[in-house]
Length: 190
Image (tube, rainbow, N blue to C red; front, side, top):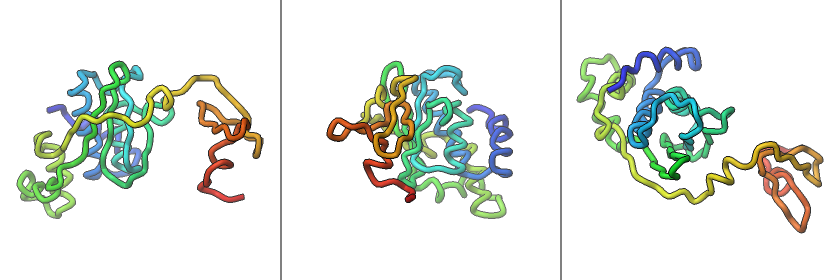
């Protein structure tokens, strides 16, 4: 197994602490790299990741894989689950990884002398074998990677609010261009 210490050092400044979910994110990224035969953290944009929750877990995935929102290789699908789907953009092969249901319960078997359950999870998640820590299954995406990645330098203007829309995220209704906020329900109100 890889040495996790270097990854933990990168994570500390992001949260001022290390937590079990960060470890899970790192371990999931490592497993994806092993399955797809990739070196991590990636410097190319071969690996694309969907994370199913934000926070510490997503930072663990990002630090391990090199997938970033700003590089457009990381996408948040906020399902409130500690899970991630990793896509090899060369082959379109995809795997979804999540913790085993009994991972928390089994942490005590790997770190029985830690002072609290939280500390047991923190230590155990670093040393548990992949097959006891994580569940992995091949998946088929229901969204097109081409649509997610989109065309660079494409810009249009929303016919309702007048704001610029990039990355082919516009919607066309009755021949007019709209941003998603004007066409669907927005997360904000003006």
